[in-house]
Length: 297
Ligand SMILES: Nc1ncnc2c1ncn2[C@@H]1O[C@H](COP(=O)(O)OP(=O)(O)OP(=O)(O)O)[C@@H](O)[C@H]1O
Ligand SMILES: [Mg+2]
Image 1: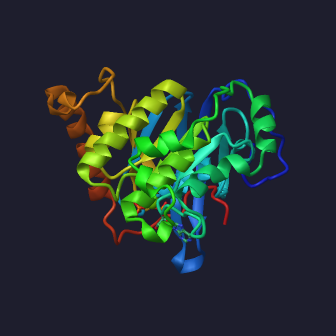
Image 2 (image 1 turned 120 degrees about the vertical axis):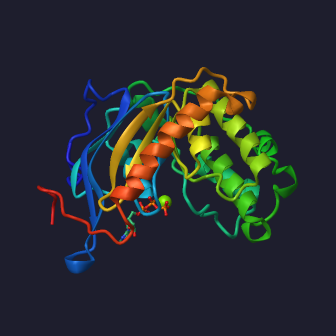
């Protein structure tokens, strides 16, 4: 179905019912000389239960791609489906949990109030969710337990303004986990965390992913984080934003701290660094942004 047509049918198509599928997505911001091609003919296939990371230079369109999957952005041309339905419908059914690049917490609610919010709004979503093919029913999590695992027990009754940047990020992560979404979209969720907190939260994320069979799409600037977490890493390039490489990370799981020091792990880091370097060389930051053929104007 076409992204620009909100009234398009939302029936399950058998070929994409078990995947996130983006076909030929084009996103152009602005017009005239300030026109910017944020995404050019982007194709993505993510199977249910996969952990996929997106890595690439700043401004290459990673957040735009994530917002497209979340139904927060519409493409100028191309199609997008999340398990056979439109992103908008998946979002309405609370199948999608998003950890945005900025935590976006409600300033008047304390930590517990913020993380409990999604379960309280739009209860109709639970009914919708059950009707969507392949949806996995899960018991509601104990939010205090999740906050404890994220090291936020002492902050439960604090307001966002009283938290550090890292604590705000962790609150946003718990809020997204709490919905028990089929798809978890995470936009540089660990960027404000110190190294040890980051490693501990990575492990919790992998546990949740493993237990719940959640599909995760994860944006990061860290090569080693992408390798440690992912089944597949998509490398993007800027001007215009596009996917230039897809690397399957065939390392066995679970991926322990010890594995981070092995030659196999370094091999995958090197492969991705090489792709990133090519992306940089091809796209100097002052480069032009050709308009793709067939893109909506
Ligand atoms: N709402 C918008 N209006 C105009 N241009 C936009 C808008 N959102 C994004 N862009 C432009 O689209 C391009 C891609 O932006 P995006 O936020 O997706 O990049 P990114 O890869 O997530 O970057 P970063 O790593 O810095 O977060 C950038 O050049 C940005 O300036
Ligand atoms: Mg971004």
